[in-house]
Length: 184
Image 1 (cartoon, rainbow, N blue to C red):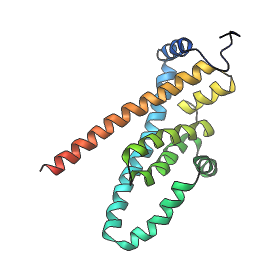
Image 2: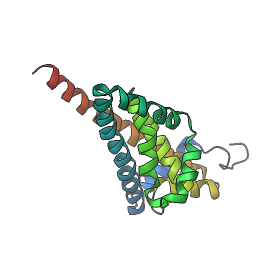
Image 3: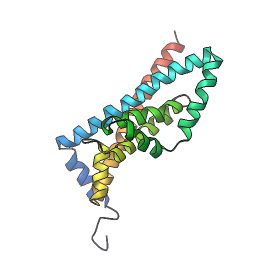
Image 4: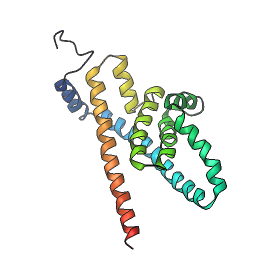
């Protein structure tokens, strides 16, 4: 504030102003939609595969033994390593789907809530590194390149809000399904 520069830390007022400005542009909603679809797709694929593998592992000790090391490797490998490696094989436009899937699969088996948060963190990190056009990750990358701190904070708030709302909606649906199954 003393220097009158917001490169190091943007004021809350400028972040809210920027968020308000962004919300009235079509480009903002296209980026939110792009990232939402890709990251949620990765999450849902991991969820369904996680359920399928859990059922198989329950029925077969062999499947459980075969899955365990793969899950351990995915859980312990840094997200950035997966992203960089996957950039060789997967177009950056689809990278957030695959990385979200990879990061959710092992965590879904232990907790949906953790995997939802990890999914958004990993998916957007993949977008920042892969820089697919029209994604939230691209917006964060550009904010970093141009030292646009209000944009950085505004997009970070968008990610947090989308993640929070999606988590609440998804877990609400899961809770209702579990309740219906238990009370049949």
